[in-house]
Amino acid sequence: MSFLDAMRKLWRRVAPRNHSDVEEELRSNLEAYQEDLIHRGLTAEEAQRKARIDLGQPATQNETYRAAVGLRIFDELGGDLRYGLRALGRNPGFAAVAVLSLALGIGATTAMFSLIYAVLLHPFPYADADRIMNPAIIDDQHPDEPRWFAMTRPQFETLRQSPVIQSLLGFAEANMEITGGAIPEDVLGTYLTGNAESFFGVPALLGRGIEPFDDQGPGQHVAVLNYKFWQRHFAGDPHVVGRTIELDHVPYTIVGIMPRTFAFNDTTGVGDIYLPRSLLRDTVNPPVTSPYVPWIKLRPHVTPAAADAALTSFVSVFAKQTPGHFPERWHLQLQPIIVPFQQNTGRTLMLLFAGVLLLLIIGCANCSILLLARGRAPA
Amino acid sequence: MTKSVELPQGALEMLILKGVSLGPLHGYGILLRIQQISGERLEILQGSFYTAIYRLEHRGWIEGEWGESENNRRARFYSLTRSGQRQLKSETAKWTNMAAVVASILDKNSDEL
Image (cartoon, each protein chain N blue to C red):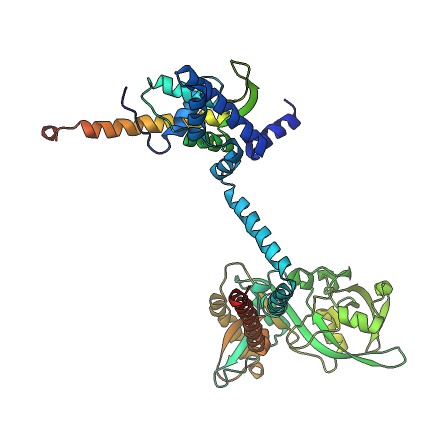
């Protein structure tokens, strides 16, 4: 048997039979039964009557068939749908009002939910964003003002050894100036450790991101552009990759452009230009001693509380080494990177969402009142 | 006239599978075959008989094919599919097992306990 035959056979087995097929079969069974009855001594007329009573009408047998194989629900659904459409068509003004009030409610709710989804539920393009943590130092005397802490290179290397950490990103921000053009322009430079591309898991839109070999030794003079900065400064020119940009009188080769969704650092200030971390000491005056602000990607299945406990011993040592970075009494709290967003905009958005939800409910109420009113109106 | 037996839930399906397993037959023929084997002790309501056939076919246990009946009438002949054979086998085993258990309990007298 060929494959096609097999398929046809399979289809015949699962597909419902059509109306005339079912009807014809019942008719054939009916006739066989009638003949049998006549053999047993009934008259032709009696046999026909009895057969009809026992078996039913061939014309309605398809309904019996569809009920038996569980297709009745689709038939009823189809009937309801047709009835509903006809009712709407009979009364277009009423239909328009009902559709409009529901559409407004649904549209507003959907738009609001999309916003909440983008801002609160899934704001980051990073891989495993729910495991990326912002280690905050909570001052026990002012617990509502979490602080970040910066680390020296040895501290950063030590922290990276912790078994709860899958990947550790260090970054630092610096205000820079684009030089070499007619007018100098202020930009925010963000220095990233060489593991940035694998930490974020966001591929560059054009070219490449900061890679480990950019960060080795004294560091390569390469730059990766933020999407908005690229649009603003280069008008989205795709040929900019490979060209040179001069920052604080030092030339850098542009090696890549990040996609629009990538906006590190999302909370304190979006960088315009991303540079390898190793360059920081060379370009800023006076030299920065603690150039590593950490973002931590935890290993899977490590809870923030467990990580707090595991990392506190590390950070206690740092606090003794660089007491200036820490308040007198503090504790460590890993915060998901979404927390600042929730604190800033979460309440407002939720309030707005509740508002549009109310709009939807009003739309529904509107519809039912319309229906009631129509039911009462004289025909 | 002999007393007719009423079938418990699901038994009709099993009997149809058995009837079809003895060789392809059309709907009314299956009914006659079952009644004949039962020694005419079984009264089968035709309405529920045909819906049972529809269900069995839809589940893929039997398969219908149009053909010619013994008196040259077009009729739909049913035969057992492979999954139908498996189903019949497992249903039969289940049924005999259950019947044996029920019978053994009903047979007990008070002095045997």
